[in-house]
Image (spheres, rainbow, N blue to C red):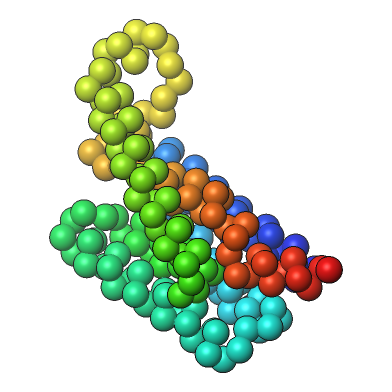
Length: 170
């Protein structure tokens, strides 16, 4: 049962965050809250030591510090910073966290370029009849949770919690 929670909660939260950011340009606070709270519930049962648990929290604090700084300089949205922080706690201070963050950066850059191209060719997009959410075309923001979600789905199978859950199954 615990393993199922580890396999399901993180991906579902990231997908929900990506979809709400795409269609509403917001990330509900309950999504990072659920991610963080569920980490606190499952972490004791996967064999994390107190030091390991602390390193997961340190990873979240570091990502939060950088995200808050980017938010203060109006480079990143507050919801994106909170989502990235909650996701980082699930990875811990590991090489997989760096892989996740690198994937977020590359996918976020590609997403930004695609959105800028769509917005610059708005008349062509409308004429082609492509089903693109109005929030994506009208807002000046980029729904970065899409990049965070895809990066999470790509790298989460190698995260410490997933690997520990797989070991518990065997």
